[in-house]
Length: 277
Image 1 (cartoon, rainbow, N blue to C red):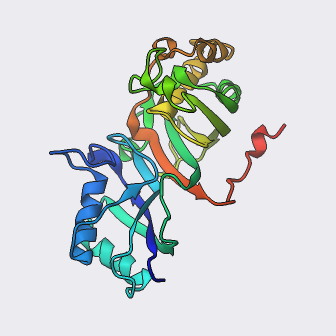
Image 2: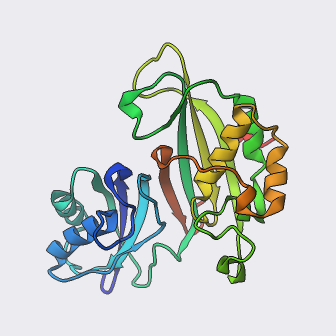
């Protein structure tokens, strides 16, 4: 396809990265990917990521766009060659040619993040991929709390990076801190690493048309407060109504968070049957 762009779907273990975006003097996913791409393209490349992930945050379906520097090279060849030059904690899982003006960030219609919480005795095998805590979480309270975030609303109370305070420059942007969440669910899932005698693994899934800094981790922290019985479910309404991050509680650690997938065009994520009623 003459003049095409490349769309890469990238997976990475974020534990040993300072984040996805290039930072001087830091190991980042973008720096590793650009290095591999430059070896194949024979010249510097400019990559665009669909979403920025912080240090320690993982991805299963991060999307990256760039100009196709070798249009005669088959997509499968790109995939194999890139993975041959990437470190073991980053992999390209799909390569697709798109129209020349495809933009991984601006063309995205929605993104899905998943967060895993282990409530029980320590599990060393998955410490890099879950938030591990002792004690129990109330599954019903987690489900009810998650519903509080559905719909289009001002999410300043869960916006990190200094963007959730009234004087933030974010408030002058066209949408400010308003985002539309189309799915926010919490459920028990089976541990994939074995059959622990005690403990429960929870998964929080959030789909939205846009995300603010540390938004998912801040939402998860609120849900855990409710799940531990420290606050009633209705407390979430009060926090959101305040529209002020200073009243929004703590931030969940990055380990449990994964950028799961990014949607384009008319593609839509499946609805959550547990929240359809």
